[in-house]
Length: 277
Image 1 (cartoon, rainbow, N blue to C red):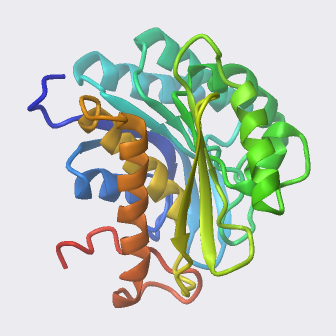
Image 2: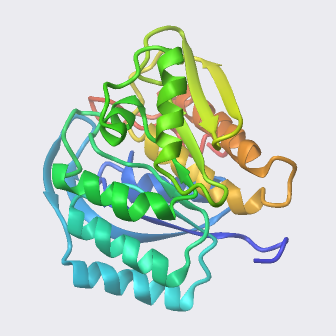
């Protein structure tokens, strides 16, 4: 990728028909932040802003064919991984990412929808740890997901988040640059606290909490924003921290502007294109 190129970024995730989460949301975030978005469908859901009423996963042979066909033709500069659903899908995605040496893999370990519906089979968690964590440049769990990955209780304070971020980083390879972004949105209070950690420096990022129920797809949007920005910020000072800070700023503004949308009766989506309309 040349310095002037527009990055090509792929989302390998699920489809949310309401457009607030999953690949549809990822493509919006990619586009809003100046990346060309591609998508590989790893799951189909019957979903709206209130509930997930069904999940269908494609045969792994077809999932493999999607990835192989895309990567054979399109230069991919970053990959965001979202809902993968089953151990077989996790294994297939990991195998193909290794084959194509995919750069900047941002893993958002989607386990539970905003509605509370489970999106990752229990037997897939071990496969995710074993096969995908070694490939991930950045891991972006929320607190419940972090508890599952570390097999401990989810952090309930910022102090506990620090130790959890350290445990999560221990799950990633130690031989090269790898990052954990532990999202603290589940903690109570008027302030949001996220931790960015690479095994050496722990960077605390704070922001005022926005009072709204429109938080459907916030995790998808943030991880996608980071994936879109990592290739663009590669030549800048502190490129990873810069990418994460810009992604957070984008998401917070999208949440703040979400009231301009009227989508559904539950947890509404964020306004991905707030800068344009």
